[in-house]
Length: 194
Image 1 (spheres, rainbow, N blue to C red):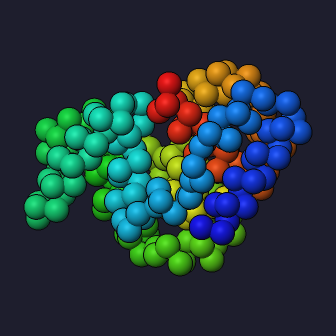
Image 2 (cartoon, rainbow, N blue to C red):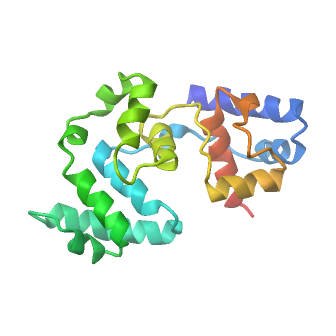
């Protein structure tokens, strides 16, 4: 929790310094948010599967499809793309998830092994997996690896929150480094309060 409190104070100070008054006022009324509260104990392949399911669908729909898919995977001796599609997945997502589930190199990676890789090697490895693009890679870094300085570009909710607070969402929000993951967490939280 110490990092979360430090990040919160840093965001407060930075938003004030940059005259992001609306965002600053939102932060003042917010509770401290921790990255750890969003992390989970899934293996990396299941984390990717869950993240791919959540791409471009509502949180509620993603949760429903994830539960069905997880049950199907857990109870199947052998997966099929049709079986995955029957859980509510599109044809491309079913194909990506099938490939991820049977990716032996991915299955051999523990969280500790990934954390010991250079970031450029992490990027190259994961971006070469079908279905994993920059958004999914950022999600992995934020919520699986708990990196504190990731700004997730191309996220519609982040863009909406940036517009609401008149932040420059097209820039990497350099002023908020080294706590841009926390910036994203607060931006997402702001949408739940409106």
